[in-house]
Length: 115
Image (cartoon, rainbow, N blue to C red; front, side):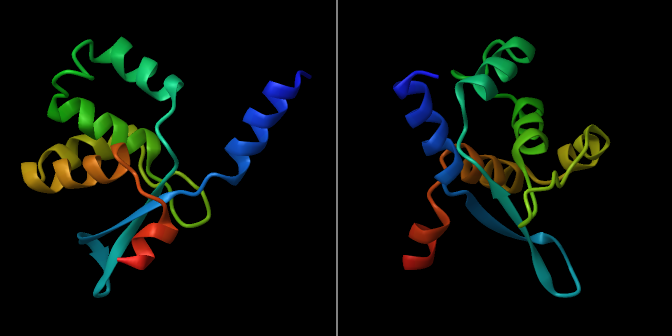
């Protein structure tokens, strides 16, 4: 393996994930904690294939697809399936946009803790 490839792989393992707390999707009075790793080139390519205007004008469906694709629980397990997309699209625009924005423009969990 090349040294560059090794450095890239090592960096990927140590990257932190962002977290957004979504009160509206929580239960028992606790917000749902959604974690997500950085958006990768593979993620963008996947979205652009399905939603050609993803980078210039993401549709609500594209935002929901990205949330379904990237959202994880604290243990790194997927939070949503494609079956969750339609109910998600029934949520207010602002809520979907906020969750999508938190995932798409992710700050580290450590930085969020400082604020």
